[in-house]
Image (cartoon, rainbow, N blue to C red; front, side, top):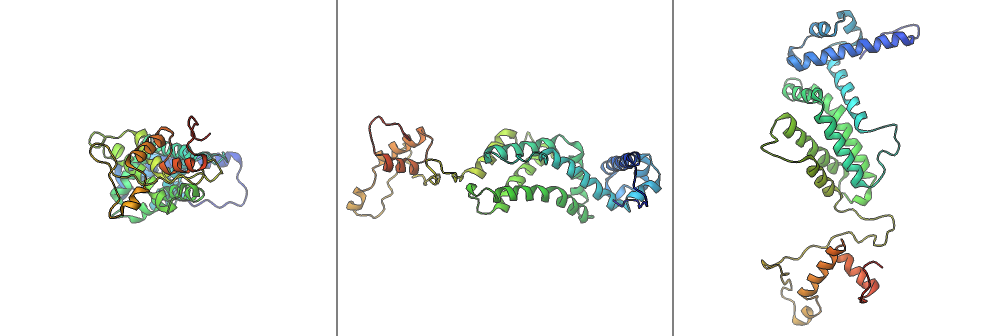
Length: 292
């Protein structure tokens, strides 16, 4: 947007009028772009829809591309502020599971309830072949901002043990975008039904599945789950001794012991590795509760 040059500072009333005019122009532009598409929309149509003069429109926006860019920037800022509260310094504090769940819900809610945003995305996808710069402006102001936020968050939380914070951010955001496109833009919720909370819960679990405790809790550093042994159709563990000698096999835990260990681990919401560590520390005292 190109501001008018003035030798004197604008008064509050003048600034208010300026904001009202710009808002009227952007509102008219949104109406025309969504109704006619980018190529068929003209500055004359925007002028008529906004109820201002052509001189007024060109005093703030040099051309149609600049007007469309300003429209995306305004909408992106509005949606970003709805998801991220910059006035709350503790917005991203708390357990990652809670923070990520809140972010996912806010992103979906603010996307799915905005017909303007959904319509604009449809328009950009349809016009991106002829006007690739439009898509680039949208990605730069919407997707990139969200990806940067998520990447910074994942990088700041090494306890999640994510191999690549940027890739994790794309997986997180991409899952939500795909859900919105399927459910709200392509109207395929009956073909690919999925409850919002089910998707969010499993997405968050996927991102946080390798989380470890780096704050010194009792069993810190033991959250890696050991690989599960295969079971027979009857539910018993399959022997995995291979070509080991009888002497080596004899020092292994028996299948029954593994099964009991698995039951204890599940009953106490722990992994088998954690149970073994607890036994190593505490022994096998009768009647003693796990973790006491």
